[in-house]
Length: 187
Length: 183
Image (cartoon, rainbow over all chains, first blue to last red; front, side, top):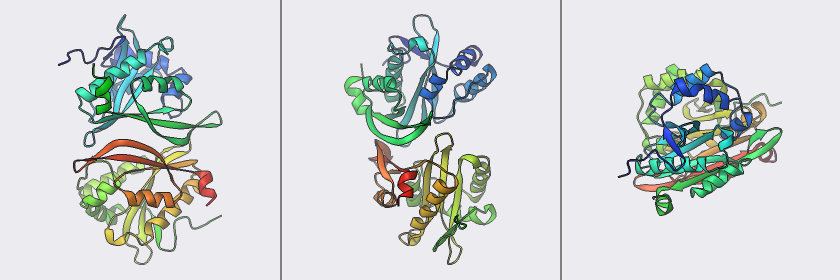
């Protein structure tokens, strides 16, 4: 039994705390590059109040088909971003993982990869899912490399589905099966 | 300009009528084969009252979802549904789903015509850029049907579906407006 399910090497996954975290979420939401890397939707800043309401709705209210965590640096407990499993289909054992690293100075340093390893362990050893899915945008090669490090495989692409600054980009779908994760990820 | 977006030779596309159609849609949910061919959610019978509530919920989603009843022109009978949903207006992208509920109504060209009408609606009226559709690898008929309609297989999420003890892939297909206009 692993009693450190939520601990990685660099980060720990915790529950969100809307009182304390909302101002960080609102600050990350001012960064349009972050928003465009994270979501297909229209980039839009949020007030602290809106961020707080969203945290209450999506992270502090229990949902049957999703769970969200705040990533915190183990070193100083600083909130770095969020990660969660969404659209969990319990009948099929499939879920989509989504990650947003809000603190730019933590980009490209292994924090997101570490958080992904933690949530995969949670998905396969606690939720007992069969597979985990994600989508990553063609213009986000850094994220794609991170997912490949976690042994996600490319499973296809929605051609030209994103429209940013007058150009079209693909959304790439990736997936990892529990049996694949157990070969390399089950440490 | 084409004035008849909602009428073909065999079918017409209409709104759902909560009073008349909820009973029929409730009957569809008792057809497990149809439910499993059409949706990834667990098959579950729903009462007409539950269906009516869904009609009300859909009103609120109107800008992101257009759902039509497919009715046979011959007798105006409700035979299926077709929907454009999860529309992302900024990207011009959306998902197509449809189904002909009763086996006796299949292979008669109803779905082919409904899809033809909705593709014209999606690309010519909503001015979308692309459509996606997702089905299970057990649904060969739907995959071949969509390919004939001009969709290409783009994604194969391995073993994402679990039915009757077997694992199946979730197959994603897509079609761009350009590909539609050239047909």
